[in-house]
Amino acid sequence: MTIAITGASGQLGRLVADQLLDTVDPAEVVLLTRDPAKLAAYAERGADVRAADFGKPDELVEAFAGVERVLLISTDVVGARVEGHRAAIDAAAKAGVRHIAYTSVPEPTPDNPAGVVPDHAATEEALRESGLAWTMLRNSLYADMQVDSVAQAAASGQLITNIGDGGAAYVTRADCAAVAVGVLTGEGHEGKAYDVTGPRAYTAADLGELAGQQSGKPVEVVQVDDEAYTAGLVSAGLPDFIAPLLTSFGAATRLGKLATVTDVVERVGGRTPTPLDALV
Image (cartoon, rainbow, N blue to C red; front, side):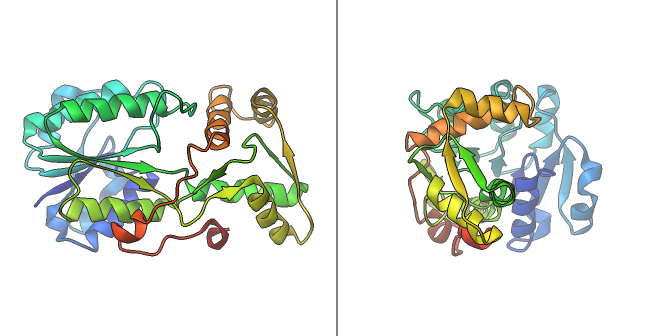
């Protein structure tokens, strides 16, 4: 069985590739990337590294040739990635791919204010309509991305947030990779949508406590509204298009869209999920 990973040179893609190469024969692994030179080390380990650009759909069918299962890692152009995802799905179908696992987000529903939801919802719909077997990997917010936020709060003595009383079941990229590998190499995952989460949901108070443990001093939790949070991010130097996106994740957390905790990492990924405390 031949397994392909799209976006294999990205952070999640490399983690999946590492775990996959430790699980199956490297000759069965196809790594797709716009720049194959970035994955030269994986080619040396025996993986088949191929060029693939979602913006060049005519070339994608060849990139998927001989592949049975695909991990479609969502691209990073938020708000403009559905066309590329659809091109990849169409090309995979034409190439004879049988099963696609896709990295989505928890609760990709109209009432979820997270800015990434429309892209993920549209891609999930395209997969369901493709005629291929599918698995949705609805990864929670990455715990890896919270480490700097906790460190900044520890340094400043304040955790400024817009998540209210909501909690988020932060999950590490490595745990998400393990679940992806479990799906790609296992059986019985077709037609399933998995919420991939950490072992507990963390509230603002929990994050403030973690920051206080780092600094050795109490950290004040300051709750602000979405407008003020976005303005603060922009004044801190974040680009205008990134700040509202981060704010939207806070709004989703506030509404409980990221609070669900599951056993998917252990049950499908075969490992104990890493709590944010341990990562920090």
